[in-house]
Image (cartoon, rainbow, N blue to C red; front, side, top):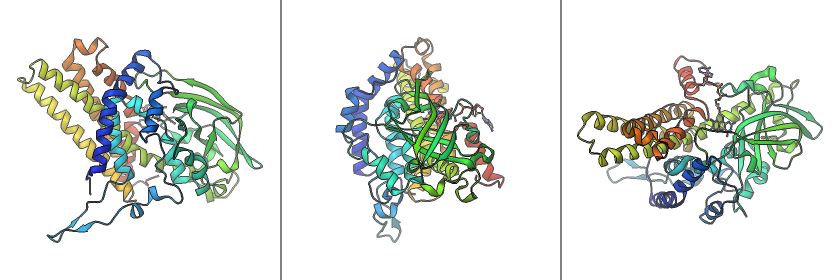
Length: 418
Ligand SMILES: Cc1cc2nc3c(=O)[nH]c(=O)nc-3n(C[C@H](O)[C@H](O)[C@H](O)COP(=O)(O)OP(=O)(O)OC[C@H]3O[C@@H](n4cnc5c(N)ncnc54)[C@H](O)[C@@H]3O)c2cc1C
């Protein structure tokens, strides 16, 4: 494994640190106090575009983001005879390193950043070349802040994605989508939303299909921003699809995925597999973001311990040390899962391990902070209290801790990987 942070990545991290201190954290605190997401027209988003952020990872043409061999120079032979791998971090590892730093400053603001967001992995992994061009090209040099979104969850289907009830029915050269979606990040401001639907609920996951639904599609509407306990700087939005006609060309993967309820098993599990591939890409990133929040909480706890001369208490020192160690372990799990993705190696179990461990470690850090700060933390105007509210969602999004443990355990007892 090579976790080298090269000079270029170091510079990008330093840039985020500066942006974090001057813009991201203050904006996150402001949104938290106001109890609403940062406005899509906020000048901060235009600043991000100027800084080269808010863009797609897709470089155009075939899929170089998924082909490390085409992006990376080979490892070199060291004088001592060993092979030294000094290649720069691949896109997944770079993504987790930067995500951790962004979340350190404010995870809510980080998720509100323009860009294709969680909608990008399914378009990359399942989209045809034509679909990548159609949906991602606009994010290469965006003329204005643009967002993408991802909508799997429904009021009656969270962990059990097989339970989704949004239906898709073929109608000539269109599909008709009907259903309710909830908690989709940035959905009301998005150019398009990747919507998961079922062609046949009786087939469970095998009936799933994913569509890219453009913003102005008739039948897409009723956007409502949900109330959240934390991470208030970005919107989590519910919406409805009512007889929503989507062109057949917007079915991710193209027409070979279009087999309907009566059709062959040719398309079986294509939609579900696509969702799982997306999660393998995004779970290490969510884990890394949890590490970022945890680090921020640990910094608050340690600063308080220093200011109040608590360092003489071995119980305090012990808890600070243990928390730091857990966060380091969590970071390594995230980096390993991302490194495997960059090597095009299976990483389902590692991605779940990262996602199962990191939010728990980060929650420990926030709990430690709350306990050390005591009354100061409980008053509700200290950063530690906001971090405590922000961190819980990290265990929930992209599959809860319990679900990750199921994924890991299935492999241990020899059950199929799904
Ligand atoms: C801040 C936030 C942002 C989100 N963003 C998005 C988004 O952008 N797009 C999107 O599609 N969704 C999003 N979600 C939804 C998220 O993916 C779901 O909340 C999550 O999958 C859990 O589903 P649920 O809330 O319905 O809980 P449930 O599935 O109802 O689970 C309730 C509890 O039961 C446990 N449980 C469930 N099944 C089992 C089992 N088999 N064994 C053991 N325990 C089990 C769960 O772990 C959980 O503790 C977001 C959620 C939050 C909180």
